[in-house]
Length: 386
Ligand SMILES: Cc1ncc(COP(=O)(O)O)c(C=O)c1O
Image (cartoon, rainbow, N blue to C red; front, side, top):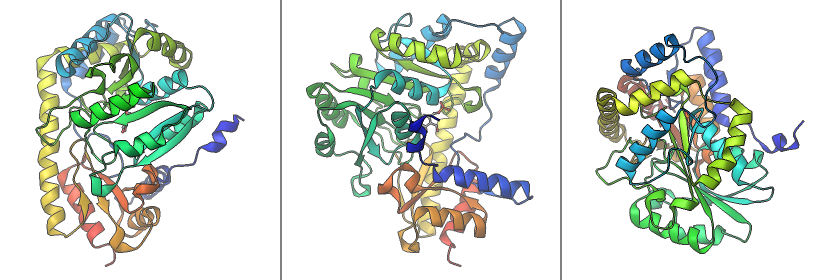
């Protein structure tokens, strides 16, 4: 067996997910707030485009970098929305979702022993992907008192001669923290001074609950050629099951990632790629996506009011569709709390420790679920001891 597998720990979130399935198989109704899977239906035009592509014969192997038409649409969209300029011919690779993009990116970028600075809390797949690539995750805690924003001096202290890469995720899963321009400028300075690459995971970039501008670090001077930009259709267009994502980076890095993608999946399903092109180029789908983002923000406000009325302590996200709820008053680890909440109240949440040790006083709930379900779950949390 690959010895690197022994470095991976089973995330508590998977333990919860297994338990949820077992309870549901026993006929138990569970309030499911554990998975970031949009509860909205995928816009109908996307389904139609996918059907049509298959009926038209798009059922063969395709270009391993992705269909040129989709790469062009993605490059154009990133130019218009983020002011970043990647050439669709040589600097864009279509992937099987953002997860595959992260995995392939890390496999291509890292040599054994390379250190990777990760923010804590962060999406667990980063640390797993770094370990599988032979890298060494170095975690930098982002404090709740600092709105879960990284302190650039803490980042600086974590950088050594072996540091190769810094992973950013804005808006962040699980904290919802969004990195603003001044902070990104400080991080960019650090990256340039230490010759670091930055993997920028922007899969939640269209789900924002403030009016602040969204900035991609790739748009800052000197950062374009050291940024590996990752995006996905899963959250933005409510199509996680269709598995469509993208990496944008300089041609040198895309050339390095292509063989990893080729030998893992050959190419992404062409009919899904044409559905993705439809999403980006059909104004009705873009409007539907904006509407979903607005609905998340409406839920965000309603949840804030509801948690206040229940006197729950929580962290207010600036983007994405998760809340971190503070469980310190209950005096339990986040894993024990989540397992007990599931057994006693049939409510599924993710223990904060899944995202890093600094988050063990928190649990994560998603609001990519109906507001009624979210409220029922929050009531169970507030009544945990009753
Ligand atoms: C931060 C982050 N990045 C990437 C992904 C990957 O999403 P997908 O593979 O569906 O594109 C997720 C999914 O939850 C995520 O939370």
